[in-house]
Image 1 (cartoon, one colour):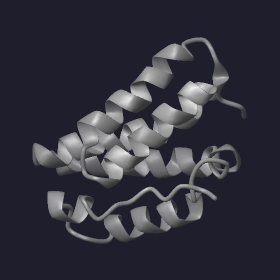
Image 2 (cartoon, rainbow, N blue to C red; image 1 turned 60 degrees about the vertical axis):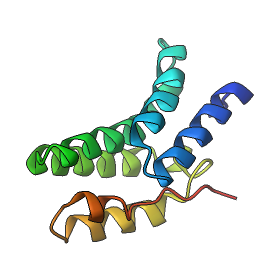
Image 3 (tube, rainbow, N blue to C red; image 1 turned 120 degrees about the vertical axis):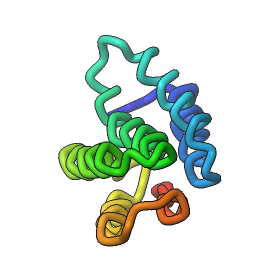
Length: 120
């Protein structure tokens, strides 16, 4: 699954923002690519990232059931699109981190420990 240089830059900027707990910024970066690829199947691999940034907003608003739902959906989508995602991130590491997160009482502090590690 090939992306343009601009898309890759936005995806990685989103990952960097996410890992710095700047979830709104991460969401914006990923949403730019999502919108740019409006009718393109490649955009589907952004779904787990966007779901994770949305999960944070729910967690922040103490809507833990909604946050957990989005985290679980994100995990499902990571597994579904893992071969494509492995070109961008370390999917197995993210899945493991999500599983650890789901075993804890969800708080903003706990969520902030979640990191997306780039491949390569």
